[in-house]
Image 1 (cartoon, one colour):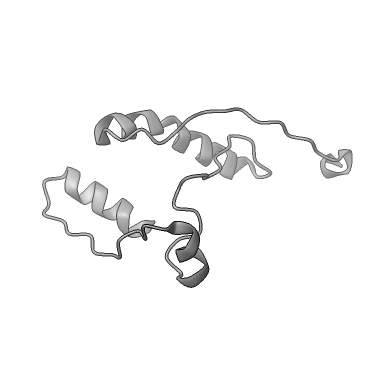
Image 2 (cartoon, rainbow, N blue to C red):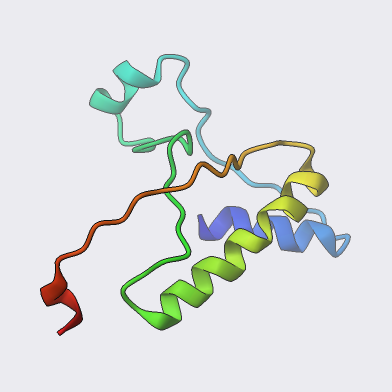
Length: 94
């Protein structure tokens, strides 16, 4: 999503931006098996604050903290926090 992120930030600085790409298919179940458009269409993206790597966990957490502002600015609700259950083998921490 580098292109869409770049377009978003350029447009907030009064730049004229055109982002060109294919439309999402109407029937995503059929399209996902026939085309390489998208694997998930952002309907079930997993986000988490807990990670194996301290840097990624921090980066992920800062990103999630910005979701509310992005929803407000765009007018599009996209994030619904639901919680999680994490089970890990003790050997991972050794």
